[in-house]
Length: 230
Image (cartoon, rainbow, N blue to C red; front, top):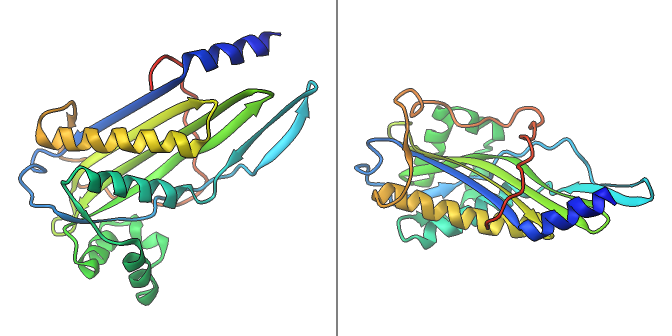
């Protein structure tokens, strides 16, 4: 009975979305138009599962392709703002194959800059998916999506903006939660760069940090407490 009450309350409350954008002081002055969005790093340790617990069907599922899915949708939303022109995914895949790039090549700023010059872009978006899963207990269904992204200038190797987003979405798939989350984040990045929206400032030492590396299983962040909102 207690579980049923918790599930019902969660469905009524809807979803919880959190985003945070930081912009480098010089980002607004750097002429960045053409960018490439790389597949995000996503190391998952859970596997699809379903098991009987206290006579209730319960389980969880993670999407192995979440890194590419989030990157593609974020790229589309960034292009929709009108601020950037995005390199086609097929062009990126072709170049990666021709030059035998590995995921570990994106773990250093030198690797990101080399790839950027080959693609002929001003900057590259790299990121990490921290969480992308759906969990259910009977009719209680919760999807959690979380990721971070950075735009790295190809010439200087500095981070122009960094963003983090997290969403808990009830009674829906994580793909649906990702749609709303990347749309909101892209709008906030655009607003922060325009000076018309909220957004913090990157500290000098943060602008030169290496992009996230794809090493080891990602540790999911603590579950967000459900609250009203999108």
